[in-house]
Image (cartoon, rainbow over all chains, first blue to last red; front, side, top):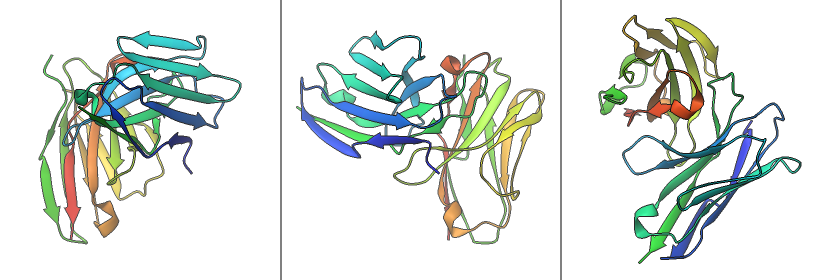
Length: 112
Length: 112
């Protein structure tokens, strides 16, 4: 069964827009929530990660929002650029466990 | 640091054959995990090795097996290949925690 559900499957924004990707999880034992960026022909690369003790984390143009009670978290890409066009995966894990459960991915296209 | 390298990059095998995929972990990383990523899906955890011992396994049959060597390189072996085994196989390594989890670019396996 899929432990992390991700939506939407794909989205297209104009340069400067703010794509938002949402994820929901079921396992309350999860306490580590990373986002990965994957370009064609490459492996996933860690973008940003959050733990449940904070509700928001920003790194450059990327922001994670976390809602522990709703078991949901989301990624916002501020001032998106064509170079941000990629597939984004949310994931979840327990801190003492290297087994990541991934969402199905969102393909983001940023048009110039 | 040299990153995580995987070989070969592409491979075509016939149903019923056996295949060995190789991974060279990032320097100093003592934990390695393998994931299967089907086309258009998120990576699925196969298993993890720590200090040459299997340390966690996902929902994959026994014909998926692995090895980790003293130099922290690793192999994924798949016996009796099936058409559904066609996927991108990713290796990831880490030293201490999930923030340092680094993926290789993967091996694209096609079973015909």
